[in-house]
Length: 475
Image 1 (cartoon, rainbow, N blue to C red):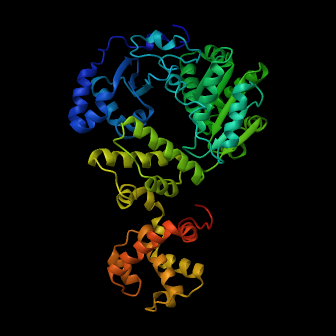
Image 2: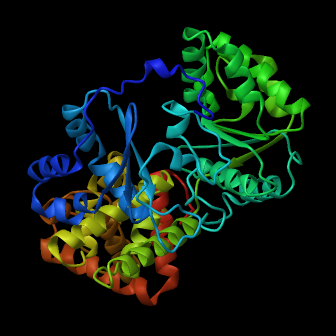
Image 3: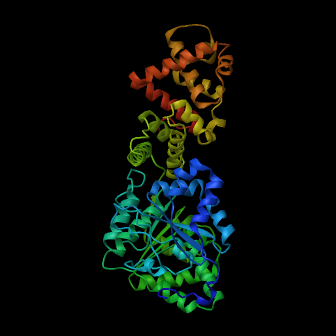
């Protein structure tokens, strides 16, 4: 078969084909009727291959939700019927997107029709083929990722302008999305032959080719491409033989004018156990980073995702702006956790048929928010607030009701309520034995004043960042 250099004798054609209706019945028993009707039933079986199955869903959101919540268990059920299956792949079948092939697909060859994105059948390359949904058009732009985005756009318009292009950043920041977008643009331009693979799967194919005595075909395959995109290059560390082959492949592609794009979680000079000559080649091109997403970008992402969900569920779900801003301001680790937090809130809304209030959202996202809670002690909050308002702790905890003391006291109580899991009576005891009704009054007063007093609102955010992150200005 075209593009297949693996030994066909290694395939097993004798196993019985999967009966998807049987699998779905088992999944219904496993997950229950509610989850099955909401999610699992909407999965369509597309095709079965040597060691994986291909399924389709109607939206990217559904794919991400199923992947994060149910995929491992679905795979276990499938493996109980056919042990050779070791992974599941998705096709997002959005009819409105003309770039996506129509389903169902009935045979293996149809997966290779009308595409010049190379892959090797039944290999790990197929797992990492280009996703038609990850385009420049739906990459959400902010100050933190603007440079990487502009460089990626430039490369996709003018091949070999920056060669190699090296993009680095933390987990879940959008590196793979940019590589995917470059690949989509270049494969449609002058029918470029595009190879998109992760470093881990490059290693797998390299080792397998050695075992099958097919290194000549391996070399020909990887060196006969116009565009090579390699994701997560840091996983090549320590594999000397593979680094040797990659180095010669890299040079061969540069010599013939092919474009190379690489992603990693750190800059080239910080890659551990990678040959110096390889790091030098990486540094010889354009090196750009994707920084931690700022509040404006996080809020833009949450707002867009919320709108997508509202349209998808036909107005059944509407996340209030207050909740959107809360998630955007509190979940800062990466974009995946940000969208994961929104998915949790949406799931709550669908299960209980109601929109959660802010207190309920804090409970839903407790494990994400509490990653900082060990830093937010009542003593720390009181000290930071006193320093900010230039009063001493004894004055703040006293019974005096002077205006210059009341507001800092209420602020400290409010911050204690939102940054710790302490109960109202516990908070009252730490503020000189005040009654829980006083604590409630203080919290409500600050919440009300924040809406009408921008200066107080900014002060609260500044204090919160000092307490949690030791930063004074980030919101």
